[in-house]
Length: 454
Image 1 (cartoon, rainbow, N blue to C red):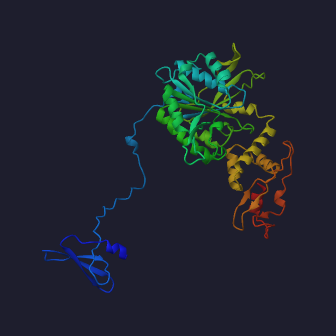
Image 2: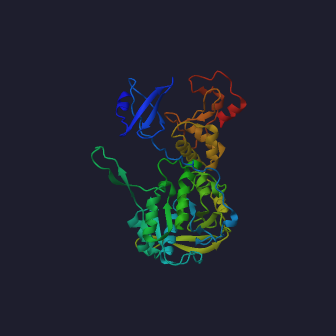
Image 3: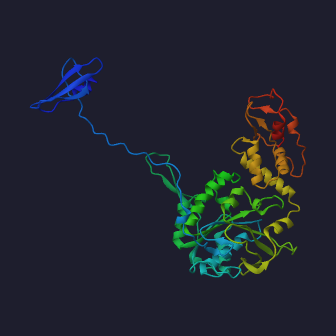
């Protein structure tokens, strides 16, 4: 403090008089030619007067940001009509999902749709879109090659390929190991979270359609496709981008291996995917023709209009080995009837799907048994199939302390049984293990025994 005080000097014609009041030193600032003193608080040394630091002017306090509800009166909202890329099936400014098993022509349908958008053509059922004319298309494709598959299909469908771009990579900065060297931009696979790159591609060709095929391949690596919250966290910004740019986003997805049931639960991954979209489409073989040549495109979800009629189609080979979609017109089938017809012979596939589900869900560590069961139901996995998959993987329920929940965790070495093995699930009859080591010193309650069994 002495050093600080020693640097303080009064202005010319001023000096300080100090006085100790028992608690603080009081400085009286005396100016030459002024009758009245001004008092300042400071310090003194060796009984000598010293200058106090100049007074600082504090800015007025800023008001805290307002918090609370943000309300919109519906009287101030102007009603708008839904705009359609394909009336009744693919809305503009929204997300649409196209579900189906491999080999049924989902990707061929999206290239057919892209071709129609690029030339301003009519839709497969003869309907006209709400577009003013030809528009651009952005493709994100992880399974088909651009040169030998996608371009020949677009040509076969009569596309204006100058209006179509494929987003194949994004440049990401990679820090240099040498701190004196700058970071390097390196290409990386895009994801649906790369909104700036998708926005740039949309602007490049004035796109009104974005195709993500398949959507699972373009989820960020940290996204668990079986967790509803993860999926919605990724798709919500993509939906906002679709609304911002008034672009239709069509996400292609494979079906899971569940049998029959509600079409909303048959798409791969979490129920959050079909929950995030406004329109759902499904393709399946025509059950009336056992040769499988004819397929059906049906509506599985329609939030914005009456469900449109299903359409039949088949794939036709053209010169060069490409295929194109030939539409045959409306049929009476629905998504539910199509899936009900294809339910036989899928039990073993359902078990494999459940095992994959558990591997991915538990990859980061143990999860409460109730959470696993809830996520499995959302993914369309039945309780008995989930139980068989748990046994096949060697998962043993573990009690997290005396008051904690039962959890499931993958073993270090998973004991996988054959898919068609019906293993008796009697783990709940064995002494449960504690996270603290050894058997639990108390008998499980009926509820705990039920959780361990499930």
